[in-house]
Length: 105
Image (cartoon, rainbow, N blue to C red):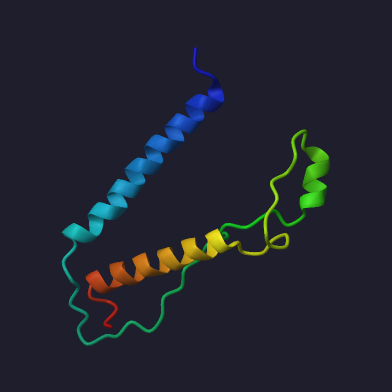
């Protein structure tokens, strides 16, 4: 019998793959928009956070039976991996807006 956490993880993974597939397919079927002379002024992305360590590792360690992971940056600061992920997200977003005719180089 499959455990509940394993079932939740499997379900989450399935929906994540489905959502990613939809996101990747949408730009291929979207035609460039007729902007009617309008110009994109700015893009605002609202995100929870990038890849960071906890904001208070010492406090979390007191609640954990296992050692808390160590990071090469201070608590709450963006890791190098997180920075790279944000750069990739920005490049993808730029490509999407450009493919829709909203962001001219």
